[in-house]
Length: 218
Image 1 (tube, one colour):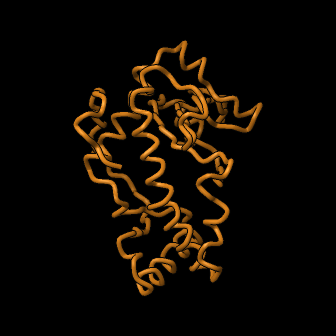
Image 2 (cartoon, one colour):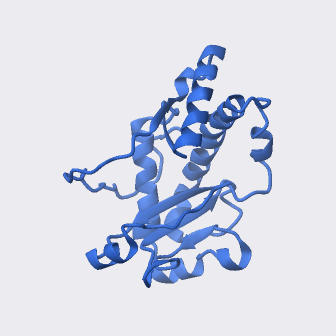
């Protein structure tokens, strides 16, 4: 993914400042993808990734091939989806995940029940890697080529590397999982933009600070 001076202008998204609260953060493994270019590096990372998924279920990825400028740009584009789209369009392009199983489109706030009568406060927009498969809100259309490049970069340069590491770590043929996630396969692989909205203290108590119930991804 490369940004050029001819890309459509979009408003800059300013993220919230880092919290000053004294929080107990999870100690997650950091997978450095730049070390996956030698057999020795792959062996070490495969063991690290396997253990991280077995013990904690998550890990960070660094040196994924996207520059800070490209990362900032994709956050700007993501914000367009939520702030430059009318409620009418959000309704028009909402996903029908319960009816069809497809997440493509908007998942609006207060869709899932969390606990104690509290509904979720997470808004998402999912774009299939084939960005032309379905229609999109007007504000997003000029930047769809960038979203497509972002999806392609992550599929080949991040996802495939991780899938190979996990296969090696599990002592399987290296391309075992890659073959199950072919880029051109008819699947629900997509770019997901997410926005979390604040909740009241009362809702935090009712849900014991849980924002989404346990779930899996495939």
